[in-house]
Length: 543
Image 1: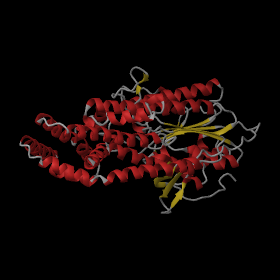
Image 2: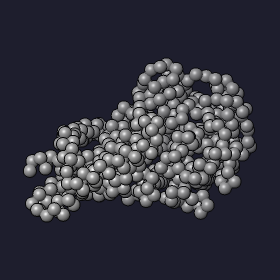
Image 3: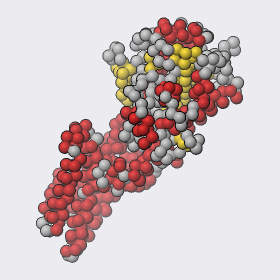
Image 4: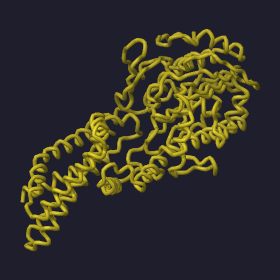
């Protein structure tokens, strides 16, 4: 009886092996990127394992009382079938490891299929001959692997305790008091970052099906820096580089409210929150500042903000419907097991489309959250510097450019999001024009990095249209859009020298000081600073 319970417990635990892995990865690396850790995912997987254990154990006790050979044969067959779930789960986890992929590429998928067919045939032969060797081996293996139950539950309990303490301490930084607005100073800067906005597709090699009238309209009255490139290829360290003016080559989430930056030139690691940033210097100069963004928990890291709104993803979120309860999370986790009975299940159409729709729902929620917060900040006359970091056109596609509406369909892609970014810019401009703020406001529109086609190629939401697009594009282009509209500017002014956009912080501060008032002065400033190394920590940039 006790042995049956151990076998049932071990099998139930291994059945949820991929769910355990996903939950633990979130708690290892994900608490920085979410609004609040979802302890329901931990509770759900533990309850699921215990519930399945009771079901299996009860079934085993009932079947042992039966003397019917047919029932006994069916029970053994069912036991072997149940083993497919943990085996396929283990295969999918191995498939994510580099060394396993290398072996698979070496021997080919045919060898893996042949191995699976051979093992299946041996199990069927053993079952037909009633020798039970396969059952005995499987039972021994399950007993030997039973200590992993203690390990998994122990890790879950530790994460639960550790992150409860961390969350209690990691809160948004207090907002800075509003400084009195200078009556004789109307200087305002709105800095807009469209995540993953590609210069080539937006302006140079725009597909005929893509219309971006708002970007074209803004470009016609801005300084267009056509050779700008970003400080990094990933938002994780590119945005901190832009905000601090210090080039980071990599970054790592340290806690819910801290990011470690690995600096490029100094070969050292620093905490992002300890670095002075553009908002620090702006406030020292007497300007109130605001930020609305996504991905980074800006409000938990950056001080000196008068207004702040950060949109972060929800764990176990049911798209736009909010968080899932423990029971709902249990059902969601259990529903993912059936498709996983087949190795490489992500290729199954229905399962794949479900995952795509859920991801798109979450991305739309982030975009709408940032857009709504941005509309309030850009018309707040007390704010002298506002940063808006939009989640588009970053994949997944959440817009249908042909029907001009939001969508969760798998066909929506990066090009659709590009058009959504254009519509978002148009909405931002319209709101500022209605408030009679557009003409007198300095507007900078750029991005944190270009479209990383090779990074997304072949991933869950990759589409045939994107594949066709990539096949007609030459080598990757590191250039990013950089459109700077000065107050009152009405004409295009082109700048064709190469520079790293990490100098944006210095440029914004020079604009706040009132040193740059016309395109020629900006061009001279760019010529003087475009080759500068920005790894200093000066706190006198507004003096």
